[in-house]
Amino acid sequence: MQQDFVNLRFGMFIHYSIQTYLNVEHAPPRQDLKIFNPTNLNCDQWAEAAISSKMTYGVLTTKHHDGFSLWNSSVTEYDIANSSYMGDVVKEFVEAFRSRNLKVGLYYSIRDKQHKIKKGNVTPDKVALIKTQLKELLTNYGPIDMIVFDGWGNSWHKSPTFEEISYSEIYWHIKNIQPDCLVITHQQDPAVSDIIHFEQNAGQNISGENSLPAQSGPCIQSRWFWDLEHPNEELKSVEFIVNECLKPFNDIYCNLLLNCAPNRQGLMDENVLERLSEIGEAWDPPQTIEEIPKQWKNWPVPQK
Image 1 (cartoon, helix red, strand yellow):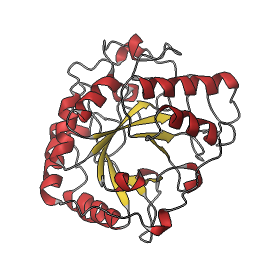
Image 2 (cartoon, rainbow, N blue to C red):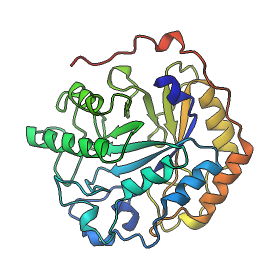
Image 3 (cartoon, helix red, strand yellow):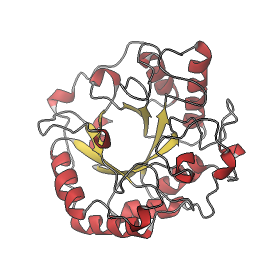
């Protein structure tokens, strides 16, 4: 699975949630969910934009640190069913990408301000909520290629530790539902992630000597979630994306996961569409890895 993942080379990170309508990166809890109201949500457009840049997978923020779920969850009312949008963004994303043979990943934040899940405040009920939501994501939308966790074991956002919320317990919960789903945390420790992950916008820069299957990426815009200034701002350049990220990352077994934030209509801005197309014209994917490097063997798997 790690070999297949690294051969994907280039993916689209999609930060889209209640923050999009607040012009903030981190939303406080207890928002009026009616502000979430995409008037022209088009995940097909996202997928076509990914293809134009030669991306091969996408990762959607199903639930960020604020706790708002982009699907109708049975364990909370702080979800899309109580917004102004009468749909299921997770379903639309998965179907649009999968129909074009793009792999699908779902981002999920363990840290949850709405449900008060944070370091020092973990209870069995909160763990049960997390496991129920993960089961929903892994049973309602067909095969999921990867779950990307955030707000777990980090030094920021008051994230619960891997001891407070057992990595082993969550890992095997996922594998028992979908054995082929990769478990990726925002960590560089193989003991707590199937793929090591570098949050480039948070200053976690990958070493040129990396030899492990990895993922890293910046934002094509100036920040994770859409901002009113984004349609008119200068985006990351083709030169930066291709020659400073894609090519050197791919040379050291690392995928580029480039964040592209949809706007309040639920669409990628025109400047993003244009830049992604330019990237696709300037970049050719490298040859596939045919054999697993020896340093990948005996990857640590947590005990049940």
